[in-house]
Length: 200
Image (cartoon, rainbow, N blue to C red):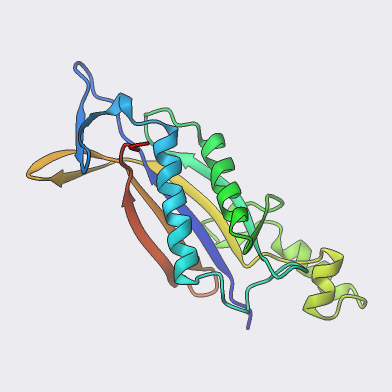
């Protein structure tokens, strides 16, 4: 049976405080919220992509692939649930670019993810076309004709979390990439990464 998975991107942002700028602590020391920018989120996203490739989560041969052997990944949206303004369009474009640079992934935005039903909104229509097309009986033929349903989808949200670092509590930016099987809800990948100020 085909493995249906969903790739969920969770980027943790921070909430702005009234009065003096709130500070956060990480490996680089103390940083004000205003000093964290989109490039820092991009750095964390790139780190996650590298980890996923290294762990081989896209190597499953049951995942739907294009004619060049790349896993077809549906990309939905990254939601910002924090009060801090984040350029999610820029971040989404960066993540898609990093995925495709691996040469293991090809991204499509033809589907939207329904988290409540754990499904892609366009899946049923596409499967009906596949089932009724006598000239696309095999998976390889469906790929050639473009009649394919992605097994993985990337979506996400941005939020903040208070954590303790060296005895001090502060707002931390956490980015999580989560791979979940749509079929049974099993998490294939989950690893939070603290977004730190880049040094280059």
